[in-house]
Length: 457
Image (cartoon, rainbow, N blue to C red; front, top):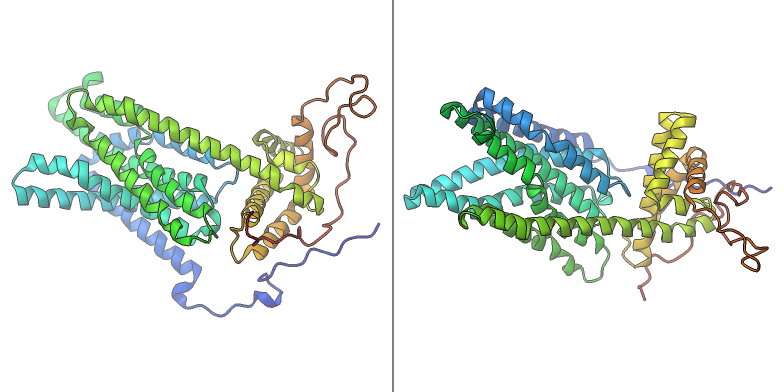
């Protein structure tokens, strides 16, 4: 059997003519930028820690910290679940949470305090200044500070930011970090109030604050900032569109919606005795349900894109016939990782997970190319992804083939005159009753031949 030529090394890789690069200035080096970012977030964290501790006291800070951390794992896991189709790097999520908890919280505390104090001094009306600060100043400052994290990932991690789900995840995790720090402050102050008044138990200010902020509305800040993330996600999905000016509209529109909903939420306490509950029931809960439906629908559409785009790479010999079906099912993906873990260990399971992520990115890249929205680096990016898949094929492909056989519905019982020889027709190469199809020895072509830049019909 003739073997296919080896897969060419992607341009820019070591050992190729494209791998040489000019020396960058010291401030353009990656370790310098990472070091500056880590230093900024660390200093912000130390300052915000000192400010919160000064306002709440040591005991109040510890109580607030213990209560505020409770919703964080649940919210983080929810956003991570949404990102399971094409999971982004952990470092993006760590940055988003750290920015929200440290930098955005510090900006909000300093700016809100300064603006409220200035208004109170100018108007000689402290109560009015507090109301204006909560309903106007705080939404603008806080949502802008949280949106900065989404903007930074959008600008500097463009490969990891391709659609609505990515925007929702980054924005949601950023807001989760912000709410974490804010809850420490509110719960710590409430505990200090109870210490002064002697209130204990379910009737205490701490219990009431915990119920409102942690039980009833842990999703409030994520819900606001997710609107900003959706705006950036729409702009990312419009990448390559000829009408580039339209891409500038969704991010500020999403930010304005986030500010508006935040202002409505903060101002609900001024709408009368039942204003808070009316806003919560009539606006917050339906908005949360609608956005949840949107992101779940978007996730299902992503799986459909994987199922529709990857067969082209099967025809070219890069993937086995079973893989598009397995990669388009979250259950099959999990079964593939479990199969690799049982037979080859944890490292094999991580290899399969990486293979799934690269294959998904490849499907999305081809989808954008077919719609005429691929960037100038389409060919290079496609070759890089195919190279990463080919490196992991020996471990991942058998596991995915096993998962496809396990998740394929059983064949229909034979009926006279139905199908070929009375057997229900099935896709070649997967299913418990289908003959095993050997894996290809190599790619049939460098990559599927089509024009990614054609104008969509």
